[in-house]
Length: 263
Image (tube, rainbow, N blue to C red; front, side, top):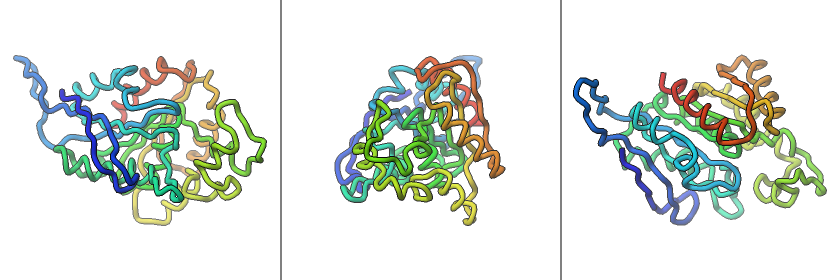
């Protein structure tokens, strides 16, 4: 198992960026145990949450063990607090970066499968929204989407007034990230619009895995998105159990989602 930190010049973000990678190609051979397939690896692009960073998944979850055990490469980029969407005014295209550029770059750098069905995107909270948004926007790259306790705040902030403040984010911050909130619904930042647009193409919709704790403050928006997927008859899995917006929940469900993805 190689844990690698990579710096490279991103065209999408117009600067040097950094990401962590788990590359399980140097696993120890154990007598009597079947050797891992050394062919092209499946890949998971795993996004952190709001106020998080580069080392969150490695520090607080068992993702390294899962990567090693199931021979899946895992890539963990930095999204800062930009919800993994494009800021065209600043020429900082976070969505293009995680949804397309990073996929293509890592495929050149590591022995990865280039198949859509072997490529996944996932995350928690802000990263869960980022996985849904970019998994749908760049659906030609991803076969599966993992979204845990997703901050699908587009339901709450569309058409929000200038006095909006939910204790975490206020109107000025949200406008700087999402643009004109009166234009949010139906845009490429709106997961429902992205999915409806995808139906009009010949690109298959990625399978979606959603999970949220019953004590999570984002439970309501996860219910809304689940209900939307059901109404549109989109293939998905939704799991819900006791839990808060915490690593106890995410660490439990990343393993379940990981196994779901590699089936």
